[in-house]
Image (cartoon, rainbow, N blue to C red; front, side):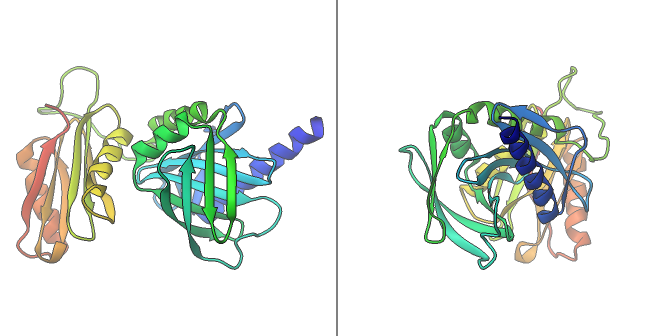
Length: 287
């Protein structure tokens, strides 16, 4: 039993070191946590110094490691094979994800390095609910065949990952203060605007209790309309605006009032040499 415990520790350590190297992420010191058979950590982006994601990982007897990751962009899974570089000769492939008897979800798996791959889910709410409530996750592809993973303890693990994301979402970000017409009281409210870089569609959110929740909702709204959605701007106890120029050029910014946010967004849009910049959307995080 002692040797088995040592092996598990070695595998977990290997996965997180490998994970950090492949994604240009570094572990945030002191962020590690346990959730039953799952182990978790928070990571920061080496280039920006900001929080990148929180992930929870479990090693299975099949020698695969499965990881669920929450990031500002949404929900990802990572799959790693622990004993050999299984993904050495592949760059990407189509994969089907299915929890119990829920509708299958079609994904594109992409190689990060020779030992592990990742896949992004477009609908955060759906997969998060399924994995919390489900018993078995199946991943199928012509490359991997059919893999099955027991989801026992996944609800606890996902909650821990969500708590981690809420804790570190502002890690490395500049200090922000609320003033002017910001919401009263000590509770902060967050909003976000998401934009499709494909066709200019957008989604937005407001009155959320964390940046992570606000960004997740805005991305969900945007992805219901188009692909290629990214967060254009987020704001806390203030207002945000999105300006669009010719040819889907854009700029986004914040302000302590709608007027200030819109003015800043127009200036940002124009600073990228976009012509005919006009306000597409503006709102505040509070009522």
